[in-house]
Image (cartoon, rainbow, N blue to C red; front, side, top):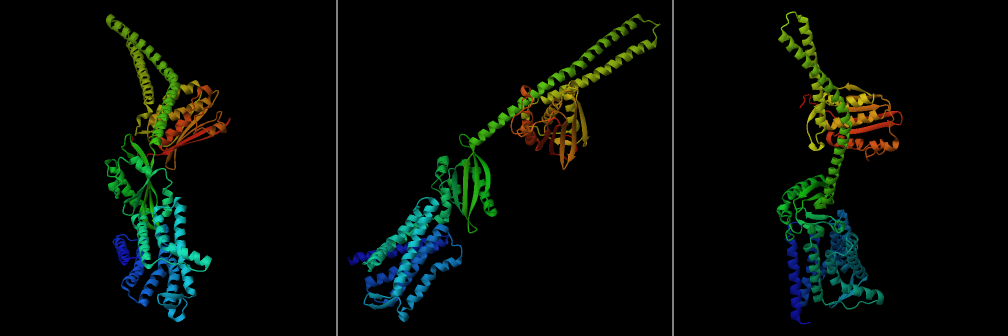
Length: 610
């Protein structure tokens, strides 16, 4: 070939290697994969420079050139194999592993550099030719083996973790195969025919080494895969249906999946690197701050942190966010952020909540309907008595007026006194009836308050018992039942929550107990404090509940009353006790022996009534 072209090839080769070395050297955050990439390129440059001096300038310094090039040739396979391990795993587990990989290079170098003593590698040199010794072929086979392992290791684990050969691995493999392909062909011919075919001219090796160095540098530097996450973790990301971001240790966005781009394409800047720049839209203002704070927390605690975020899109979208630190050999390498769209789940949850409130309202109305009859009877008696009393007062008033007009001086004082005493008696009774009716009206008014009001107040046990007594008085009389109130706690003890809700729950449970008897019976309502909690126990000795119903009583709307029951009572009582009082409800029952229901919730230690 023309000498000018050969000179250009060598010049381009050396310039390429120097540029690549400078590019890697200027990296601020160098990892082991960068260092070994630098070493690999440096070794090829060490081989190219003496070869150029020999071919172009006819420098005959056999000893120096041979030793320099041999050093490069003997250590390049080890650096390439190490580089393939680092691309896959980021770091070898032990320092001893590096020594094991480079041990053959060290041993063969010592053998080669002491060749003048034992002649095991090169028997003799005749001009530019050499007569190979037995170790020459051992070294040759070892080089081919190491490079082959590097190629197959990279391809195998890339396919294993990602399901395909990634661009990074493709560049790395091409970089190895371009200069070594002629050696593979020579090795095959040697094994099959017993001789080697002609190898490439030295200047062509310089050209192939340049291409190899470029490919390897692209694999390590341009894709900068190890600045992000090792290939073994990437396999997980390739099969995720939710949105995700991968951040490096500087919170630069180094990867995002197509789902994320599809979901937020109108709000992100994919050309930027920094998380703040990628998510520069005002939509993410609060989101970014939450992410940064939780990234620090996740990396320091070495655990995944979950949070929920609402993004004001059209319509508002809700996301569950998982922030997972990426640790390699206990070193923080970056962060994996998952964003799961839960907008649909939110809508379903709100719908379920709305339906539950409707069911609660339905049960409240059913309960009120049961109380209306008793309330009407309770009001009828005092109203009739008050009406009679008012009639008597009118008659007595007329008598007094008549006496005063007649001015009967023979009328004794006792006659006046009897009339006045009769009037005072009925006045007192009417006042009592009015107070009683006012209490009944107040109790009913409280029960008609919508359960969606979300009160946050306190009430005393005394007030609670007062409302229960008023509202159940007629039902107890009508069914010939007795309610025994066993109070083992101060009546002034306060309970946090809505008295309307608890009154309705207890009334329903007591009515259930009443209905468990055919001809009346006793019901015990016990209120006591145990283990920092208030316990309400309603116990009867009536029909009891079957095991089949017991198994479903808190999970399904089930009734034992046939057409007269809604099936909502205990089901909704359980929801209300947990949701509004942070408590629990338990039930024990046996057929024909009775039922015991215990409601428990935390006690309020403030003795002053709000």
